[in-house]
Image 1 (cartoon, rainbow, N blue to C red):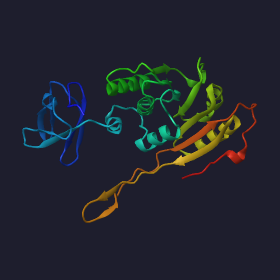
Image 2: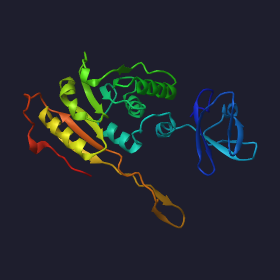
Image 3: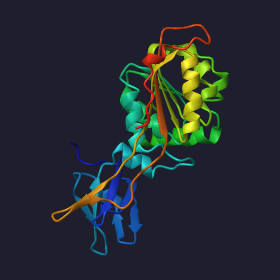
Image 4: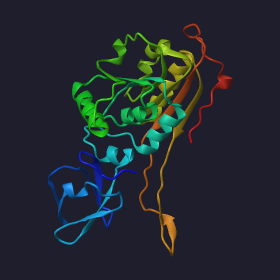
Length: 274
């Protein structure tokens, strides 16, 4: 892999695991461990280190998307990587898809979707609040170094939705997603997938009811928990803290168009908490 260069984002990691996300530029960086010149990172390989004036080592690594998401500016709760990965995977996002998302927050899901789409798909993001849309746009631009040409950000209410295209996937991160199911359903091609993230199970119940009413089938509800382990030469045990409940994922597939009020065959629905 190429050596580190000007303008790149880099993680400075102390020997104790403390992390700072910085951009390589002609400027100093100071912390409780001392000061380094960021320009000294240019031309170095990942895994090398800068030595502070206090004699401490700060190791250099390119940030992963998960690293960036946890360090980026935000005004809302971010979607955790454990949920982002599941949303992209179960949503079966792939190059060439046209994807619609509503509720952009700070841009974590947008970043994940854009990475999965590459340059061969389109992402349409709808956000009601201008300040959230601007922050998400800034976070996306900072990560990629430019504003992706295949990202279309619309400031407005999804309930005023009027698209000129059909979409393959829909992602909802809204307080009341059930109110927009009937609005987005006509834009989803048969076989398309809708994924909704909700923090409480009552929201899931309302959403599943609307999905069944508006031509969706193969409905699943998942809860994903993450428990990290401590492993060394003498022991292996779970860490004292874990990332527990963050939200429920509801995943559904668009069935062939049915008349309003006609639910898909219940035998095809698979609703389970895991």
